[in-house]
Image 1 (cartoon, rainbow, N blue to C red):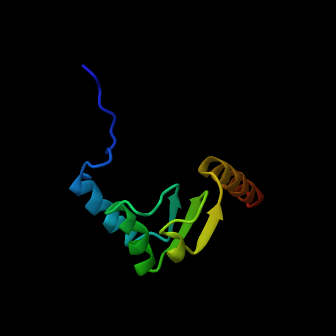
Image 2 (cartoon, rainbow, N blue to C red):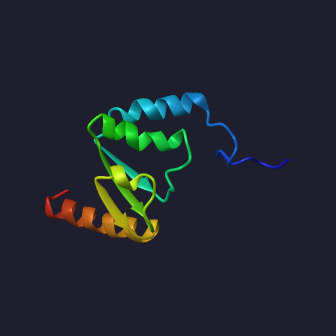
Image 3 (cartoon, rainbow, N blue to C red):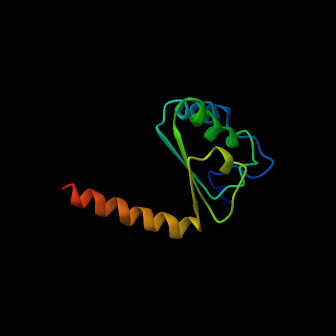
Length: 100
């Protein structure tokens, strides 16, 4: 038989236990990366708002502004793969400079 990937398709409900865990974790994080979203699909779109409400920073990476942009501390315009590759290079260089 066909195997179903471990994803949630549009129109399907999110697993409640996973969603509640994500909300709880969002209350505690220092930084939340929001990558490639319109910010219109709820309830998952609440996560950056929970982060902000609890003093965390929101960094958005998107080719264009989204519904999350107004609350983002940093908006990095570009394709996710390109921006993430650039950030990874910078982080690796910084760690190397610090002896890690």
